[in-house]
Length: 103
Length: 416
Image (cartoon, rainbow over all chains, first blue to last red; front, side, top):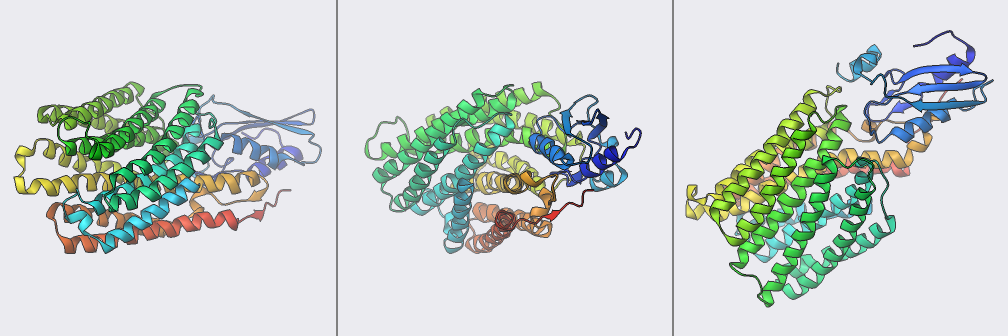
């Protein structure tokens, strides 16, 4: 998922690991919920998904992403968008996340 | 949250009371203390927690906002006062005052039904979950109206037929109409949410809804009129609806993306499975020809005991472990996500206590049901102690969850 690396993008991915899905207890990067992080003219565009539609943590996770990305040097704003295509599936998780979910 | 705390206080009172008076399970059910105890459990614990949870969950389940938090506060005052008055009046067998206290609960319930109905009306996508919840609200309205009418009938006879039949019909409307609809509806939204799955066949869920509610309506009429063949037919419709619901729930679980289920969900599913013996007991009573006449009164006590203590109470306790954690987490940790290292929902409570609570509750239900069926006082004593222990374990865990409200466990994230 990670394209070319820049200090801003590295910082974004690292910070997104501090955002957890509280129901699963795992950060959204290892869960495979972060589809893309792009830097365009000083702004970060983040595409994430959620494990299920109607997830009660929808707003909390989006707000958490914004908060985590706040204050990255050379980034003036971050835009977080929730996408449903492709739908999330457990194969998108890291090996550690799969182990925790008993897969 | 205050509904939930009030409900838990009522549940603890029920558990302590049963230890002092196990005859509640073994004596004939139509006696002042048993009726008072049942109302403390049903109105004090079950309805309070259901109301508190629905105020939080209905907006989440229907993806909208609660119509009026202020009306919910008014509901709480009327409900708590009504429950605190109705229980002693049942103990005194003073039906005039029971009617007055019941009117307070009824008033609160009207506010509740109106508030949730307006909330459901805002839902962007009405679905089978909303239909189950709306149906539960309708039966709640009718069950409480029927209860008040039964109380009024004591000093101003207005009901035709046998008064005790109307009492049974009222109880079925409450248990089968309200709580089965609620359990089915809420679980069709929350089980997929907690197990990372989704409804597998909406048409099947709608058939379940139709059969369950056909059964509820038929049971009310046939029990009130005492017409046994219609009781069996209505019970059959109910069984069909529950069987279809069970198939859908099984399909949801089979398709889940999260293999390991947590203990709160397991307790809920165990409670749903206990519906099977409860329904068998109910059907045996409906076709009482299969029972010895001397055994009928004990089955009449054991059947609701199994439905209440084996199905509804543990289903609520199982879901409450999830809901309480969710509410506290949402309030305390949601504003800190992304900024501080915060605990996950599962870390708010103790899993060993959940496991101990799960098994002790299961053993307690087996004991309570056996004591009620056999009319055994010593078994009722032992099972009541076990039940109290299971509830204390739950309350300790609830205390752990609530402690996060006052003492959040956070550490600063080490972001670059």
